[in-house]
Amino acid sequence: MQHFLIRLLSADDAPEFRETRLAGLQDHPEAFGADLEDESSRSVEWFADRLRKSAVFGGFNEARELCGLIAVARSESPKTRHSASIWGMYVKAAYRGTGLSASLLNVAVTYAFEHCSTVRLAVVESNHAARRLYSKAGFREWARDLAALKVGDVFHDEIMMRLDKPPAAETTS
Image (cartoon, rainbow, N blue to C red; front, side, top):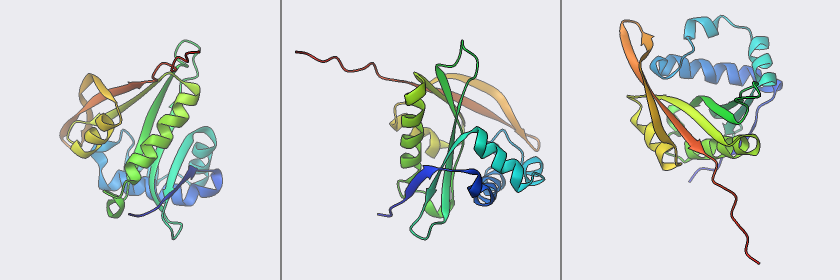
C-alpha cells in the first residue's frame, strides 16, 4: 500500500496545482464545470490567488509529487454558511485504486465539518467510481441536474449528493 501526505495547499503550490488541475480538465472534461481552454489561459498567479481563497488539499506521494486534489468551499451568506461544497476532486490515473481518493475525501469532509453541518457535491452520472466512493463515505443522492454540462455536442447529467454531520454523541454519567 502506498502512503501519501495530504495537506492544505498554499499559494507556493500554485504551479503544481495548476498542472494537476489542467490534467484533470483535459482527462475528464465531462467531470468538471470548469473548462480546459479557459483555465489553461490563466496564469500561475491566478491559481495562487485561488489557493489563497479556497481550502484545497493535495495528496503527495513519497517523491513529493502532487497526485490528487480536492477542494472545499463554504458559503459566505449567513443563511447558507452551514453548508460546504466539495469541488475539483481529481486523482491522477496512476494513483487510482491506492486509497488516495478516499483519504482526500476524508480530509475534506473532516475539514468541512469543523465549520459546517452539511457537505454537498455534484458528480457526473457516468463517473461510477466516484459515485461509489462518495456513497461509501455516506453521501446520499438528493437531486439530479439533467443536462447540467455540455462537452462538445454531448450533455451530461449531474447527481447532487450530500452528507450531513452526525449529531454529537450523547454522554452518559
